[in-house]
Length: 115
Image (tube, rainbow, N blue to C red; front, side, top):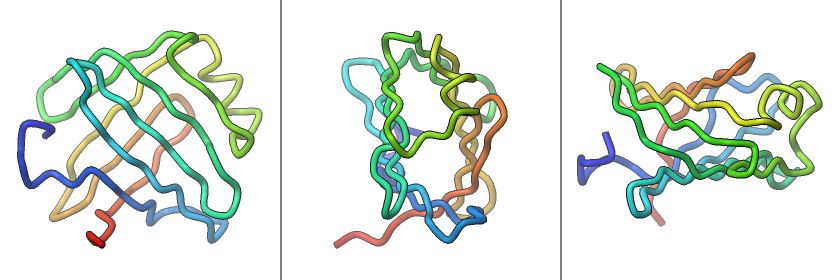
């Protein structure tokens, strides 16, 4: 996924139920995957840096409690699930869609148009 030059680095959630999509930025920095989730109108939801593990058709990033920062937009369920570390699983689905999942949460994202 990340080795593909055409892989978008910014994505917008399409499956939210509150009208405030998460915006996610994805970067690879020195062999680590950096994910930043911003909740529209609310601010930082979470950001993490983790070890990249390619597993079959998806990409997994594992992180410790020290490698994730939960922002004010993160609800208590997310805080409880990820405060000591965890993983995000990124799976390309269909044409131009990405599923991002972690314990107790998942969302479908589409690329944001380039400015």
